[in-house]
Image (cartoon, rainbow, N blue to C red; front, side, top):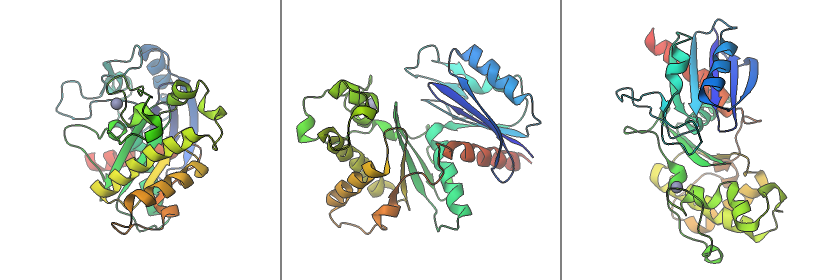
Length: 292
Ligand code: ZN
């Protein structure tokens, strides 16, 4: 059997074909231009293979409720030209196989969950945050994705402001200083005029970033009590997470027991941003199984 993975991002679509053991058989990258152009390339890529099911993990917000008239759409995205795009419909029209549709971070969370099962880690639940161009979070609880009215939007929660950051307004177009508005990649330029990659980890701005990321981890811990919290995305590094663990430890202040922080708050186990691809293969396999 062959499964298709579409990781739909704001700059590129990573498409891959994998087998039942979630191993990549082929992979390609398609630039995110207009919906028509990009989806045309996605379709012709998958037409080269005998695909049994596909899973799409997309940037959002997206409509994932099967009963909604706009199920399968990318909805209110700030990404120009992509508002109200029927991404599932465009694929389904050309390739008639079962399609699973979820957020990029849910896909990544599921991939990390599958990987933990494969490595015999004793895990039922985890949360995956990405800190990159945007900020988002996906959660697996007892092996399942969560949310009934829609998918979680953990990237837009409100956080307590760092005392040295009160003059920064934040950059979220909807909430200004929500988590995304304070720690997404573009906040480096907004605060310092420099790209994040050019800001050394010794710069105080990283302490501010860590303070907010640690609050996200704290709230996640208190609300969901997951087995593990993973941080991925371009802004994250092991050195940054060392800061986050320290802040988290101070904020939690021994209130409840959590695992060894180096394991509890960690980088993705799947390297090279591959979590969503593995997650997609597994979700495609799952949807096929559920239908048969
Ligand atoms: Zn926001």
